[in-house]
Length: 499
Image (cartoon, rainbow, N blue to C red):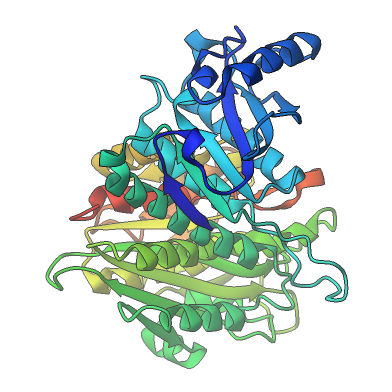
């Protein structure tokens, strides 16, 4: 996609379509600066005759432009002016992207000043517009008949108008940040949407290796089951015992600054399919368990993004990948295994497998002497009960880290919400036969799952993101969301030495 920032729409040199934001007062004063007076009167008449009320996300196309350089003019509703904010801005940009895709617009001119006010910062707006317009091109067709017509859509040229030339360089930086974030999100979505007979632990390992070939700052290491056994990762290995697919431990090391700087470590749950094992799940919606590796996908997507941005920060991505299947060799409920940390775990439910792969990965992560460790996992159905599909849950042993993550979630609008990690919940995991049980009792499932992980993270700053409610959409729009790549990238941007 070509892009540029220009001061006035009248200086365009390629025929295209103009897009303007309009509040519910239907005042088009912001448009009059860009469109000739004969067009303004026509626009007013068309608005008055239409059902366009300027409600948030509402759109109106004006086909007759009386301009040789404008094919069409589109109005995007912004809602009430006194209620306009970042959330409303994002809704408007989503509507803008739908218009672009549905109308197959190739050259787009966005009158920027009609969408920006004192509640929406220009730099932030440019980054988020870039994320969404670059995200339009995602279309899953990996397993569709290749003879069918492609439905991929991309904008050829996207021009921001009413931009002061002196700010161009700075705004280009934010536009490129948005592009990189969109690329990471699309990468994560593709991995999530792939079926489990393609996206196996080995496929994830190959994806990481391919990613490593794109940037010299990325160093990839794939540990085999034999190597994990030697390291004492019996808990991780117990999950994949019932599968023919070998488990993998994937390490992606990004070196963006001085080697003495402590890295931020991202640990992703990579269960490429989760039947529940011997504690088998009901068949209803079990196909969605291909998304149980979306934590791993988000780590890969984030590593792709930061490698494109060449951030001055050290980051390590760790992916614990396995397939959880029932068979004669599978782990049984009641089995006791020894973790890499030497703690023993009684596996009361083999469907609580995510914490089993993560606990060994979290112990392994300590070797990198991290500044922070953040694990990302589709861990519990209970988080859906608590937060629905709007926010991911966050639980942490570091209040400052939690605040930083929440701040990044508000900037990115990739929301998280803190749940308590109190000592009173720990007794839920008591076992008569091991140091710890892998599940608690009936209630507070998201919290007791995090309590389990906290037993392996006592020596460093750690946060856990439960994305079981936000990693994919259901129903008509079924598919991976790519969350929380945006949140993680914004967090890393805030921590990088230079933005």
